[in-house]
Length: 297
Image (cartoon, one colour):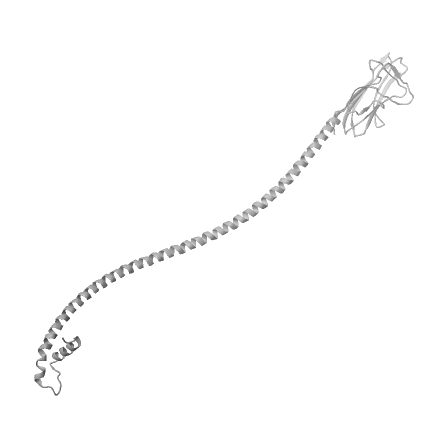
């Protein structure tokens, strides 16, 4: 059997109407070869047809597979484009989310800065409040001390404003004082009341404890003949204020007088026997000297 290469060469010579023989070979030598070649060529052509059919079938299958692959590739490309579109959309969303996150981070930082500023202000406010509370406590303590002092002062003022006294000339027995050519300070010995202790029963002098308006009154009693007068005078710091005086035309006289005086703290008020006059007192207390504070000034 001729090889494919030899058969192909012989077939080509036959198609061209030429038969290649050796130059020195006779014509009869080539004739027996031709049928054999033709037969082999027919077989070869049949085989080639079969092979061509098979190849064609393979080509069709490959074309089908190629189309399927192209369809698959197109589908994959479509999916890829969709995926890329989705990826682009996701990237766009991601960028928007990142931008939003950056904006939120900026706002968060601003909020933190604001919170820090507010915390600083709060601490300053708390410190100020503590300082104010300390000052308030000190002020309250000072106010309490002042209130205590004020209450003490008010108590003392009330005690000082409770000034009132009344005294009789003799504590016991009966006696006539005078007449005397010179004034004599009368000492009213028997004290009925002495609120504020402003009256001195040893000297007969009232000393004002506070500045204010005081009222004083004196009552005296005269007993005897009409030859001697009964009289006393009210004095303030050595100055004459009022006179209680009566010339006895009868057996008994009872002169009296009084005055309201503005006194400074330390001013003195007392009663003097009027010159050449007398007064008489007994157990029933005819002669009295009284005074009290009307209101402080």
